[in-house]
Length: 190
Image 1 (tube, one colour):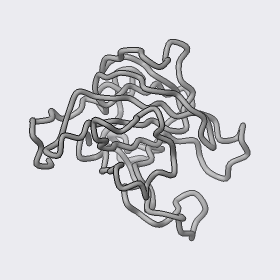
Image 2: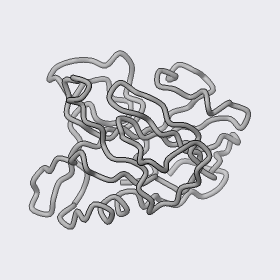
Image 3: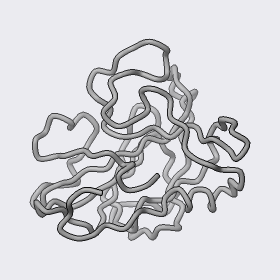
Image 4: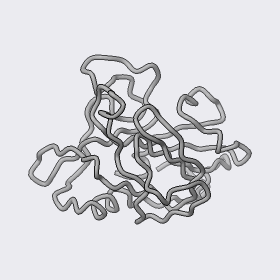
């Protein structure tokens, strides 16, 4: 865990996702090369390189208790990492992205946010909405609808923003903005 000005509890994201989707055979997340934070490789088209290091993790598969890789389906319900407030919902290249603000701050007085990309938000998810941990916020978007050459998956990013940063302006492609600090979501859940 990072050196924080307050202790951030481990997220129950995985347990909540398993419960909401009745995935009784879930054992652990399965990551292909290129699905992890900071990785440069593409995972969806064999050999390839991303235009910039991956600013999150892609959840597409898990390993079940029998050791088999299982694909997360399009009907998979997505919970949030932590309770929070919906800041905005915006379009991405597969579906939509939900940006949530959480109550945690780091030693530099920056606030924790989480982004859930390539999703179909549920009808009640709108800016200003308060969300709790066991709530369903979205399902995974179908890449076939946008003719994307990859399997449908959930992308999660976590980032720290200064209090003064206008969070409603956050979009994909901000990895070079020095005020925005992406960090590995797996620091908060496994």
